[in-house]
Amino acid sequence: MMPIQIDFNNFPTTRYQGSKRKLLPWLYKHISPLKFKSVLDVFGGTASVSYLFKKMGKQVTYNDYLKFNYYTGKSLIENNKVVLATQDIEFFLTKHKKIKYITFVQNTFKNIYYTDVENEWIDRFLCNWDNFPNIYPEKIRQYKKALAFSAFCQSALKKRPFNLFHRANLYLRLKNVKRSFGNKTSWEGSFDMYFRHFCNELNTHIFSNGEKHQALNLNVSKLSNRKEFDLIYVDPPYIRKETSGSDVDYLKFYHFLEGACEKEDWGNRIDYSSKNLCLVDVKPNEWISPKLNISAFERLFDVFKTATLVVSYKEPGIPSREKLTKLLKKFKRRVISVPGKKYDYALNRNNGFHKEYLLIGINK
Image (cartoon, rainbow, N blue to C red; front, top):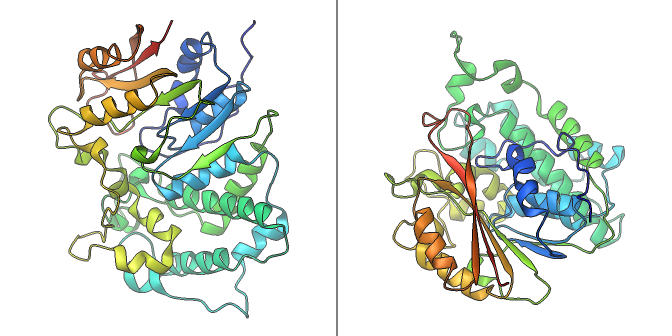
């Protein structure tokens, strides 16, 4: 069977650390020869790889333990046809007389990530999002809300230096100095403008491949072995040898967006002793622990030992490629090691040193 022709330039944009969007042609080259109809993307992130699987005509289950990422998976993977109408977009942007607006972001995050005007916009959007009217059937309404939240997240990231929330960095935007990085013009674009742009962009990427898909928001340990998964794609957080794992703590990087998902409980989850008001992690994450992630890999491989396992990882790292290969061989008859591909990340001092590689464990 001839490989499906895919236009890799026509994929949703993303500003997420560790996104595989630029590596999709390489992934497709090595994954497309495998025989499978259904796939579970365990660490779905931006949904770029899940979107590739959907483009390939597969039945896709997307999962990510961060809820703001889950909304992206729900928008682009589970959703096959629902888009945002102009009236929907304008509802999220308008101040409504019947809605009681809170000032949580304005009060809590003043002078940390956004200006006062922008914090007011975020509070208004979140209240509008909560009060999106029941004029659609509930399932359609939920897809529209997911699309809107995904557009909000992309807008919020575009206005952030480094596209992260690991530091305050508002001064980098506001200080009048000569800059060697970043784009002040982008940082200063309005939320209204970006939100409309990303809503319309997301609309253009909604499609059906004839299959029924699902988006999940589960800790990896809660995933169970289901016979409909022919292939499991595993792209876990990458731990560098010299660190404790804090450099891959995605909750720390994106805590502001995660808190915004459930604003009623946001204040209760904040660690007020942290400089940037990060969230307390209520879901222990063994995948960012150098001491625990090897056992996490082993449990995952055991749970899904009947499926083809495709592990995407960076080298050097913890565990090493040799250890992962040895571990996979405990559960698979054959392990294919795809030669590493050099991949440079923006603002990474170690560019030219890291390689992305694939380990493919099969039962035949």
